[in-house]
Length: 117
Image (cartoon, rainbow, N blue to C red; front, side, top):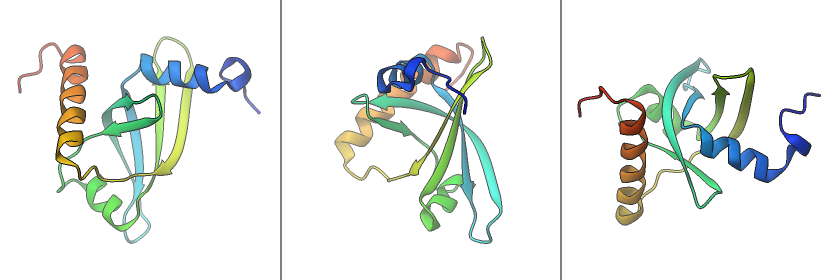
C-alpha cells in the first residue's frame, strides 16, 4: 500500500484536486475497448469534480453507454498521482451548466495563455 497523502485525509485529497486541473479520463467503449483522453476539470462544492466535452467525442459516446470512468491526476513537480473511480452524470440544469462552463473556461485560459477561443 502506498500512502500518497498525509494520513490519506479527505482534506489532503481535496487540496490536491484544487491545486491541479488537468487529468486523464479513462472510459470503455461498447465493445470493451478502453480509451483515454486529457480533460480540464474543476472542483465544485469541494465534492464534485466537473469537466466538459463535446457530445460527439469518444469519451462522451462511451459515457452514454457506460457512465463509469477513471481519472488520473498527476503532480508534474514530484511523482505523485491521484487515481479516482466513479460514475459520471451529465449536468442537465442550464444554470448549473453555465456556471460550470464559466469556471472551466477560466481554468483553461489561465493555463493556456496562447489559447485562442
